[in-house]
Length: 159
Image (cartoon, rainbow, N blue to C red; front, top):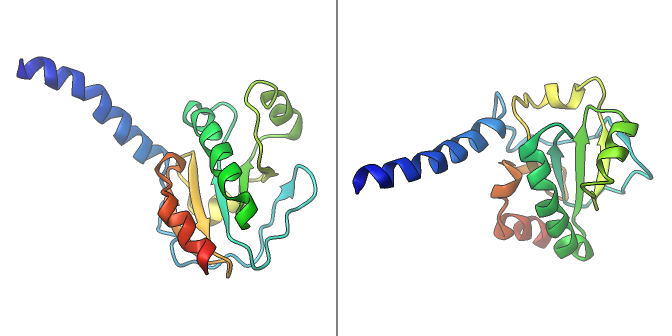
């Protein structure tokens, strides 16, 4: 019986560890202040001055990213009227993303970083990777987007 339980649990452990590896950075960015996002936006750039936001790094070819998008859409729906923005940053081109959105809609802002400058600046080593940024521009949390907690989001909305 123990052997069966172990065999059942093994894939779950691998999935958890895989998410942690995918959502990794070479350094902790918590406490870092973002002064300016040097990215191109898919449409009009959102006004971020004095507003909290989630910054998420992703790609169309990344299965965990595909799984995170509906979750982030729900987070955005829940908190956008309270002032939260979500910006999904990819190094892919606009036509690739637009084609992708036909099957996986993205309801928050998409930004393009074709030279991966922002990703390199933050030491992002695996995607998807998200950061909560408070109204002052300070990163207060980072990790896998599926690990976002309402309490972490609500904490930056109260400031």
